[in-house]
Length: 252
Image (cartoon, rainbow, N blue to C red; front, side, top):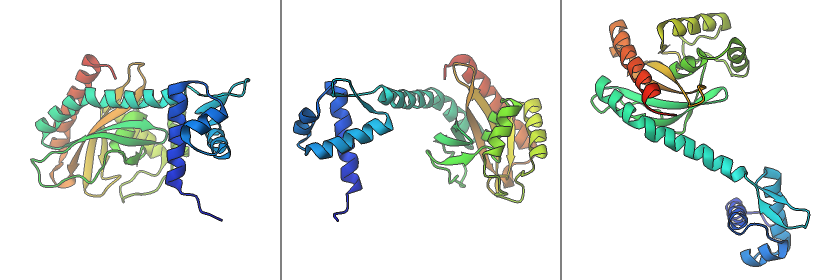
């Protein structure tokens, strides 16, 4: 049996979706002719798009794209807009602190890096990558966002997270974690004390979107060797100042 080429299948799926999006409703024979594909192949492609929610078959038998593709476009545009809006503030914070600054977005029980401004004033560079994901329970950005949530939301995220001791300092007891979140609320910022990565401490503050919902966070990452308590207080002031300015001056 001939093995299917996954790249070819994906290419055909996208071409079918692009055709439906540009032409509106189309019949099976018409699509087959436009794509120069056998009707049985097109039928399988259409069924896949219908299953995924990107196409539907009308009562007259014709096919058309759904609005699900717009949801993807809106999500992408939202992320791009947020990055473009926040990046000048991240650059300013990185220049002022001479440290690496991250911008993350909440996604379920994790967050993912959507932007990063590296500090080249210091020789140690962070290994984080834009697009990579991190847990909430052991990171400063995660704790900053969780501290703004209800007790039920926090419990649900904790229960659905894979809680492991990523370092010797990771908090793995839920009651202790709640105490940590209380401290975050009181001081206005979160601290990752080498809980996610040995040798790195981070300070983070949460950011709300235009609906008032906590959706983002920014952090300052520093090698532990130069992060004493005085430096923590200094960077916390910088982070809170930028947080207030972003929430006052722009719309996320």
